[in-house]
Image 1: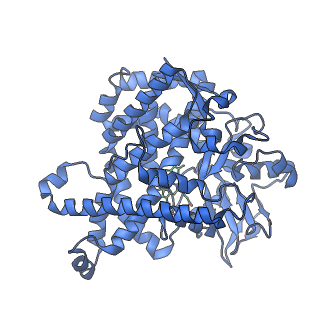
Image 2: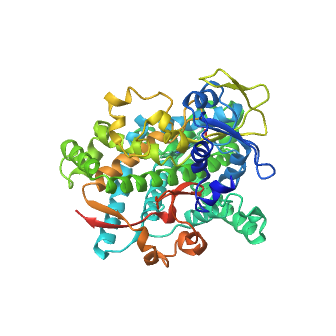
Length: 502
Ligand code: HEM
């Protein structure tokens, strides 16, 4: 283990580890156990599609404790990501309607509006010829989109700062993102105070928005309610009312029901977290891979030209016919391939006594239990040569074209996880990614600028403030844009790039 860690940059995301262990010890299975006592629970790494199915689809095993603790600091207790049983079912069903693809399509023009601001900012960077961190701009874009579609608020972080978002982003950095290197981090008094203060700001802001929204919703005539675009929270309020008992309804008649309010604050903060950095990472890595593969970029541009028309008309075409996004077949392949190679999330589960998994090749029974980190590692599964062939590490969107996709194992590609606990926001992120690619790909050329990191060392970002992150080994097998652990898996140093107008 020591040799493997020594060979990796200190900030590398731990999900890069299992394939390296498999290779080093020439393991014949795509799962194995690792006991790191006393540093963590025993781990069972899973990157075999059949065993992943047993864990997430057939048995829907509980989430690992680390996730409860992590989400507690970002959203308070009861996050949809970490809830279990009846409580999870209740809140998932309340928020499901707002995340249906058919509903999200009605909100596409809001996404286009924010993507246009993103395009304008890229244009400004291009004019200045400067190096900038793409992840910073993409994060602000995706945060503003969540604000619009989930709460119908203009957070405006693409062009300024927002107190709630600043608090939120600092909160992510105050969590233990360094693995085992600083086990005392959570106990520093200054950190405890900052986390308490940030949580107060975050909950206070979302609580006020909900109160306002609830009051306004009641005052609107029914005809108006039907016509307007409805934020995800509006559909949740409606679903909650339909599910509530008469007693709860009476309690709620004098204002926003407190149970709903507290849970909705928690879920909204969950959506801000889960919804922004995974999607922004996907946008960054798509740009990164396309600059390395000119023939993929050319094919993508051609599809946009053929289906969406001119660059100038594209925003209005998407606003008028949001379903046109469903015709962008190759664009979807590019996004799928990006999510394959650069899966930003994964699934930390646990087992329970009596739950045995089964090796699909040998039929051997594999014990689980609790404590155990039963970890389906998407990054490892998505890069396994056994599943994806000898070119597993190559960016090749055509593997997802219908004629090729039919040959893929049905449980191999799982960036949003599968089964009942799959990602509620997957359709939203796929709409966002398609809109952004449609508006950006024909306008700009990106160039990764890892060799010019000095130019962004004073940009005020969290990355710039952490000089230690730039010390020591800075690549994995020559790859400079390797993923680091920062809430989820993010491109190192926020992916420094230059852009040029086409
Ligand atoms: C590229 C983008 C995204 C990726 C790769 C992704 C990935 C995932 C994964 C792997 C899970 C399962 C986690 C687990 O089992 O512990 C998950 C769950 C979840 N995601 Fe996403 N996600 C993305 C975007 C979003 C967006 C846009 C939202 C919301 C606005 C969102 C909200 C959630 C929530 C609430 C859950 C928990 C669902 C449940 O347990 O019922 N995600 N996501």
